[in-house]
Length: 312
Image (cartoon, rainbow, N blue to C red):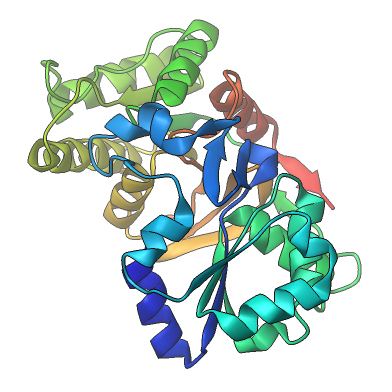
């Protein structure tokens, strides 16, 4: 994180960064500089055992301090006085802000007198606070919408416990899923495609998922297999909407389908965006971080896609 922030500061020619990683609507808050997940320090959750990026430290100033000695902090109380924020921005290169509510993030944004002179670093919580304080132009009557899907392919590459619980709930709601792909599984891409084809013939939702833990090298092969299965099913026109769980999964599948990005349309719930793939196959797509969401998040995402949405 620190290396990316340093590079961003240099490339944008800004001298100061505001770091506010809280996303209260998704249970992510910051207290005393420590990032919390539903009240638990992130390095004490299962994320400490993540197979790709294990989290060993949740104190954000400590992480940044390994790269730069100029790191300051702001408590929630500090945010109530813009003078505190101004002093921190004058004194430190990077300022880490606590937040437990959306209102705290909005107070932080309002307290920065010239928002264009700093680099803002955070999650969707900070982005929403910036949008709330500085909404910008929007055409009158503009609405975000996505069409009703005929059938949905769900690809779950994340091994996070939350995603696995959501997958179990999805299977219980929609029945069988395609053959798993990954270590400890006999499923080849061909077998996955055959199983998915059969399931789609009698239903509206199929989930293809990784199985077992793997080394970084093996995880790469698993992502390739998941993306290959999605591409093969796309060639047969068996689905017209996607749900992609896990950042690596979303990137691998989207790239394999020729997408260069996602045009956002809204959210199916906090932190779970929906949009359209930009590229030759403009599927409606929902993406979800592995650790985000309630037990019903995947079911809710599929149901939203099947009924279509139009929201202000």
